[in-house]
Image 1 (cartoon, each protein chain N blue to C red):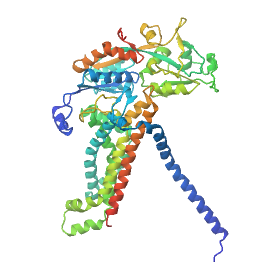
Image 2: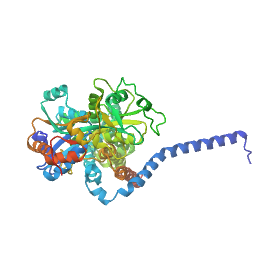
Image 3: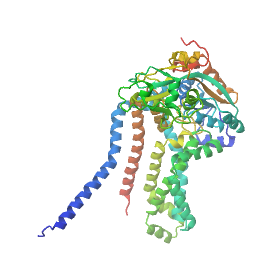
Image 4: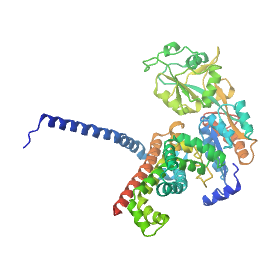
Length: 287
Length: 289
């Protein structure tokens, strides 16, 4: 979809022995939370529109948004909303980012399967992850974890350009910062892998990354019931740490990008995202 | 005949000690490579098959093979070679055969050495700014390959220059005395005698380009593309990035696919290096001096 100067194209097409023909490439980059869904969409869309190739890349929400700002991609995936300042700099560069909510993601809390904790409050999460938090050991939380001799809580978090990191801070820590000294992983499945193998650990990531080797405590909404992270609780809004997942297009989507966005938000695209453990953005019946 | 003195004994013991010590250091150097290879072959060997190499990945790489990343890496490396070999060899010929030994030449040499020391992620950022954004190549094979080409230019220049300088001066002088021009001498005498060294540098460049992730991940390589690239202005999947993706962001990824992908990547690089060594030995054997 990116336009190039015609002269350059002629030279390069000769170089490319035939060139790209009439195929359209849609460049889609961003959130590591969405990258798996984006790949699944791209893979299935090959059958729907064989002359459209959707190129998907991860790197984090920040990577997608900055590529949108410098105009090198058609669709940015993001697990957080674009900031005012980011929208402004995109407009300065001649791109008007249009927001589309394509699904919802419950951020699950992950524990080692030996950890006896079955429910955790938002206050406890703040105490563990927040910079002013005082919960440093599992006995502070009121449990003793078999296999965790040091009793120390090992906090597993994400790198700071991750949308998951940004959303967790916003939803759980409020205004305050993360406590220093957490293990910051570069991908959601790395978080899951580390927690699976570390009895002392606690981590967070999208529900879609949960495996059968990991424990998920339900989360107590202040003074209320304990809600388990599921697609259902993310859809009805009862789970407290669920967030929208965004795709940003450069301007109102038209042509191939428009058709692709329509397909994503249609029943087939929405059933794919729901199959992968996320809540769909529109009500669908996937049988 | 001679009685071993205490000093002789001592010297011999010290000698033995150092021989063993240095020998151990050498083993220490080689051991990790062998251990990695053995591990990859044990864990990934069963996954590598004809089908694995020639089937495109599906289900985010959990199923199918590695056809698209494999072909993508070949695209990236070939286009990078097309750009860097002519420039690098020409620059090396200038520096070795034409350039006078003055301040400017020394500055150029210094710049080349420094270029070799620039971290690959810095090359990546340069590639995004220059090729992706400024020249409007977009996220494409062309942008990624040119970034790789710039990153590997110092290797080509330095190895070519060394190969040219290894050709004895007497060859050139004999040629000039027959009335040949500088260019005729280079073409007929210097280059044919230096070709083995030049090719070694080129093959080293290939193996380095094939393994790099940082310079391509923002300029042309993508996590997933459901087709083979159809030209240099399209993005592509690549082996190194594919390995990075399937090992850190795909849940429930079968281990043998990760190890198998790593095995294919490392085999590509090792085969290329082995070919370079074998080729050099063959050409050395043919040399008459």
